[in-house]
Amino acid sequence: MFENKTILTGVKPTGTPHLGNYVGAIRPAIRLGHEALAHGGRHYMFIADYHAINAEKDPEVLNQKIKEIACIYLAGGLDPSKSVFYRQSDIPEIHEITTILYAYTPKGLMNKSHAYKASVDKNREAGKPDDDGINMGLYTYPTLMAADILTFNTDIVPVGRDQVQHVEIARDIAGAFNAHYQKELLKLPTYYLEENVAVVPGIDGRKMSKSYGNVIPVFADDSVIKKAVFSVKTDSRPMEEPKNPDEILVYEIYKSVAAPEKAKEMADGLSQGKLGYGHIKNMLLDAILSEIKDAREKYNYYMAHYNEVEEMLAAGAAKARPTAQETLKRLKDTVFGR
Image (cartoon, rainbow, N blue to C red; front, side, top):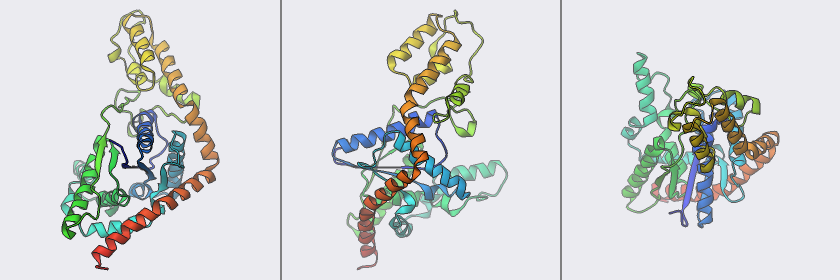
């Protein structure tokens, strides 16, 4: 399905990722990019730093998060010599295109945005006015995202289930624009939803999330990772008591990082009463450290040599801008009758 297709993925800098991010988002995004390139396609990967300022207003904190996310994707296997890797804020044409798209975006689409509706619901639960603390960046977030997508003639946007709506909005906006001028000026994108991406539970059994404080960090020191792993919730049953592995949280996490044969080994050991919780936590720790060993070394290198990363991002922006300029000219010529 990726034959000669343009794939685009944006990542918002939200801080150092945990195991759930790495397994469920970072690895799949990089793998899909490689697959597109292998089939003659084009792969864009960008850091959505303008999206990030809706929530993060501290420049020092934001800059650190941008550095971390850039280094993480490079460490995870992104090849900037093949993929087009850039910062959103380094492509000024995107923001002119956003302004044009505003004129063709129904306000009702913004009212239906999941992020906006969730913020309104949160305010109502707290007894606050609907729009308390909601800025225009959050409200118009889907239009900027549409510009991110449409600027580069994107065919496919790999997303999680909660991001499907944004691609649909981009498609609606492009369709409205094309219909108004009765010609295809913007390509209508589709989303790609990978059903088999792992959803990794946290150390307390809920979905792994920084907001729950239940994460296993993957780019921290061994001792920090070990402390998190050995905090995974277990019960008091003795080792010799046979256990259903699907009811054991350590096993559920282990499946996301271990090879299938290793996961079967743990499952058999639990069901036969041959593995205790200390054993399986050590197995989980070893699997995580093995999985992230090379990536963590690369991450630490790039963080210590960030000038090299800046050069990669600048080179990526230089590759991206000609297409952005072509799209902007096409839209301006149409809108202003030039």
